[in-house]
Length: 380
Image: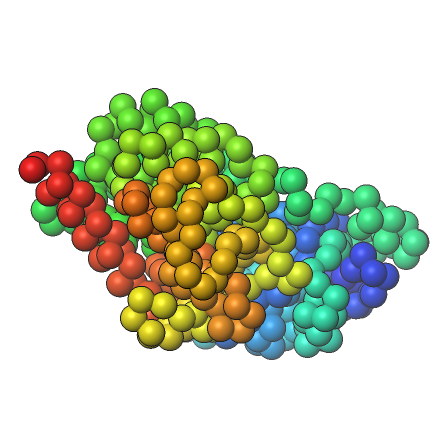
C-alpha cells in the first residue's frame, strides 16, 4: 500500500492531509458523503456518483475486498474516494482482489488516513462543495494553486452527466418466467440490480441510450417506460424530459427512480432544486403515505422535486391530478410522486437497494401491477 502523501482540499479552504491510496495524481469534483456501513463496491460502481468525490463515513473500508458479482455497472464512476482506515488485507470468502488494487487499476485517485468525521461535519453544516485530491506531483503544488484549481472546477448545477454514463447502443435483459412484454428502460446511469429486478417481474428489458428519441422508444412497441437513476442536474436534461412528456401524452405506463423521479417532476411541470448536502447512503427513513409504512431506504441524490407535500394538486403541465406519495422523514423532502390521471409514478430512492435494505422492492411489483391493469383496460 502506497504511503505517498496526499491532500484533500475543499473550496472553503479546508485541507486534510493523508496518504495516497489507489491511483496517484489530481482529481476534481463535488465532494459528498455516503453513510452506508456496507456496500462500498456498489457505491463505487453506481453511475449516479459520476462527477463526485465520495467520502465514506464508515471508518473501515475495503475489508471484504472486491468481486465480480456485485458491480452495479461496467466500471467505477466516482471522481475520487476518501476513507479513514483502508483494509490492509481483505478477508472474505467472496473476495477476488483488494479494493486498492482495483482503484489503482481503474485510475481512481483516492486518499486515506484523513478524519472523515470532520469532513462530513463540514459538508453537513456548510453543504456539499467542490474539492480536489492531490497526490504525487500534484502534492508538491503550492497550496494556493491547489485551491485555485478546485475553485476553477465545475459545480454540479447545469451539468448533463447522464449521457456520459449511459450505454451507447441498446442491450436486452430477457424476462424471467412468463414474459409480460417489452419494457423500454432509458439508461441515465442504471444499476444492474434494477435490471434484474425488472426482468424478474416478467419484463423483456430493453436498455436504451439516454439520447434515445420518443420514436425509438415507441418502435419497440413497449408495454411501459422506465427512467433510471443517474448523475447531474435534472434541469439540464431537457431532451429526456421532452421524451417523457410525449410518453405521458399517450398514457404509456411509467416508473422512475431517483433521477427518473426528478425528471417525472419536471415533465409534470414542477421545478427541481439542489439540496444543500443531499441524501447518500442506505439508512434513510421514508414514509409511504398510502400505507403509513416507514421504509429504510437507499439514496443517492443531490437534487429534489419542488412540489406540495400535502394534498392533491393539478399538474402545472396539464397532466391532471398529482400527489406526493413518499416523504423523507429526516427533512420532509419529496421522495415520490404519483399521477392520478395518467399511469405514472416514481420514487426518489433506490428500491433495488444492493447491498440493502430491501424494504422497497414492492415498488417493482406495484409497477408490474400498473402495467397489467393498463393492459386489461386496453383489452376492454
